[in-house]
Amino acid sequence: MAITALPPGTDADIARVTEALAMITPRWNVRILLALSGPPMRYTELATKVSWLQNGQLHPKLKVLCDAGLVERTEHTARHVTYRHTERGAALLPVLPMIVTWAEEHLDKADRPLPAIEQIEDSLTLLTRRHAAAILWVLKSRQEVSGRALARIVMPNSDWTNVYPPLRQLVADGLVDTDGIGQPYRLSAAGDGLSPVLGALSAWSVGQPLNQAAQHPVWGHPQAKPAPRPWVSSQSRPAPAALPPARTDEPPTWHNRDLFSHATTTRPKTPAGGPRR
Image (tube, rainbow, N blue to C red; front, side):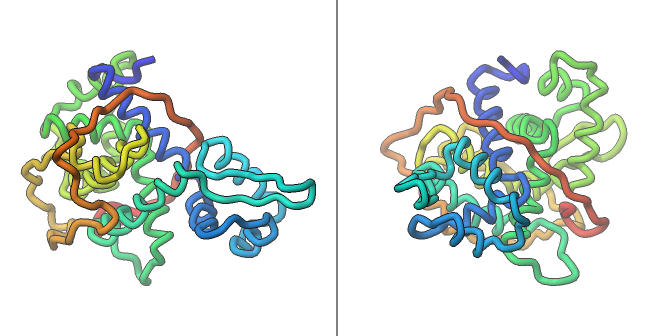
């Protein structure tokens, strides 16, 4: 079922990336995935590595990750069960350093240095706002769009004024910019900087190597970046090491395939600086 008025292939691409984000955004999911790096672990070993989870919290989290196809549960005997990443789960992990690279450049600077895991969690919260992926997609491909036009594209079956709450949130988060009421919307420098992350998630969601993200029809094509606003760092950064150069001999085909879906979460935001945490 279409969720936007965009072409079916683009609509499916947005849906897959939205679902991929929804799998890893719920609280503790990324931490559990990182804790599972390495050889298979028994439940008690994993529980020791994520000791902040209260009794009874780890098991349902593991079940959700197993159902999503990111974690594999192997029952050797009734009393010997191990957990490990699936191939799909392991393939997703290189996206996380890319999110950290983006967060270090564009997120608000905290009062204290934040661990990488908190950078990832804060960034995922911004990306999983309702309609965020679709709005970012449209603004990336069309550069400047009015609120009414965005509504017709992003939520064609809803009253067009319903686009403004998510738009205002994205402006407050620092991912979208506008010159004022009645003026068109465009990606901020921070929103445009998400290209490697969203391109890699799109590649991962269809089972392609992450280096194919550079061939993505929206996020892979370089475009002129919007002029940085005073609250966004304009310092250039090297490309993330987790995203090697794309091959040019075999251009990818972006197929429409089903993925998984799970719930999202939200965090409070703080004023000032770049995109809000």
